[in-house]
Image (tube, rainbow, N blue to C red; front, side, top):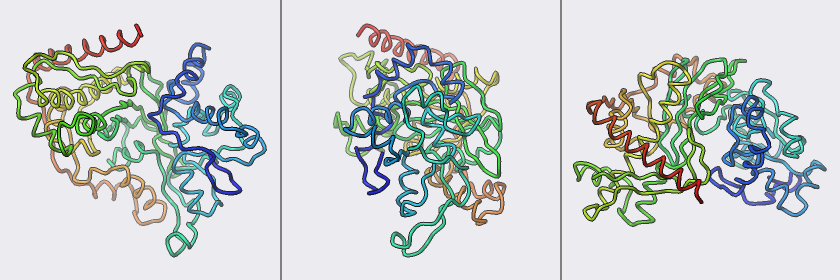
Length: 412
């Protein structure tokens, strides 16, 4: 949130992993607003999204609400802020996919929802104008890049990755193994409301059409390996985790539940905390490292199972990107646990690629989406070879560990 007259933020940005507004979210749930908010926004009520964070700033920063109601303050997610700054304060917008992540945006009417704004006491005047994801919205000022450059592509992190992975057809899906893990599946031009703890989101707006997606969000993925590296000093660099995991024949019965910021989809247990089960005298840091990598695949499989249940069909293949997707051990384990082919492209930074594709289409650099598909090159495909019996036994151990973690959370 920033002052539109000075351009200065009135408070530090609040990141998506911050849980300071969990009580706000709990109050909304206990107040019976879950069904209404999910129906309109496609989202589960959670502190993960922007709405409760915006409410927190309005209520905790001195004078913020009064200044907002006067029209002196502006709100935005990261792309809104960047575009406002790059255009010299001339353009205050958000694209549909980012707006859909705020828990204030009606994904059916493509506008801010007055009922939700009233419920959270958020002034509409401070919100950006929603626009499609591909299209020229303005030009950067000369001072920044030495010339005026059109700003033509913008999308939320995971929606951009879905586009970058060329998941243009209904039923195609990708998983981004970044700080968190995010599985998105293209559902076409109609939103599908999940019955299994997933989110319904706008994938992108392009060519006067809006495409939707189902999303599963795991809060901790690559961050778990960072914890092994920095918190426990198990390794000097994250890529070493692959060699460490492969130095032992198995995880030795160890399960790691990396719920450092609560459990996301499909559990949505905000109070859960990380846990390690099955430690013996013979457990080494290599076993814990392997179990941590395996947990990332288990969490992703939970999302795949929920998505398949919502769709009523099985998912046959999965495209992957993000830093942790370069770990061959993890990708092979994912193929084994999910019983599907895992496809990794040569370009694993799909988020920035997707935003560039959206801009390229708007400016005519790319003639069509078919041309973009031809631009994709596969690096490696991982196919399952683990026995079904072994896979099922491992999944049962994982779910037992998750159940125990949730029980501990509810006791506290």
